Image (cartoon, rainbow, N blue to C red; front, side, top):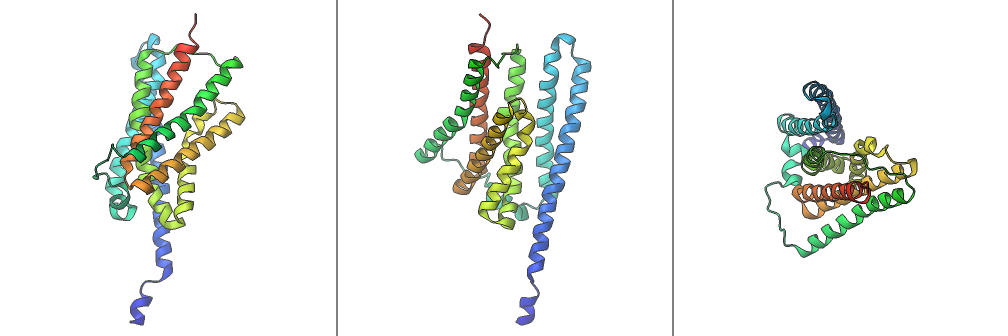
Length: 257
């Protein structure tokens, strides 16, 4: 009996955890490489195929194709190389479970979530307008459509699949619940840094904290509901609300008279 107990030493568990952390690192490096290689290739291709009058679409097309490539690569890689059982897919994703859209408690939380995390953007645009620091660009309708497809549909699926579907269960097992949420939320906020550079330094720092808190909330939703679909839905609705706020301020409040 003693010999059997010694067969499963503690260092073996640490080795498995280290291997899983290494899997996350390898996946993220490959994921970023695929996305940015696709972005460069699609941008150059669109610049070659489109006319100069359609130049404003080059970047949006590149962003959309990059997001689509990231989604395809994520699904393929995680299904091909990562064990669903070991990565926590079967236990934590629960993609096959139905969603109760009539749950009043969750609906109340969803409304509060959308209001709280949309309010900072409204505040920023309002203050920027008063300080005359905001100029509405002339954006074509096609650019808005491509942006909506990317930020409302593709990005929420990819980001939730990676951070809360794949990385979070591993971080939680390795570091515990609280540290797993903190680490996942921090890493979730980092890829949004390039989009935050457009803000003044203080606003950029606040925006990073804002993205971190969104990650914390979505992790809590996953813990409470046990279903990644809710995280994808909330993420998509939040991006939609922020996108609409952006359109309203740029096209209506700041439209030339």
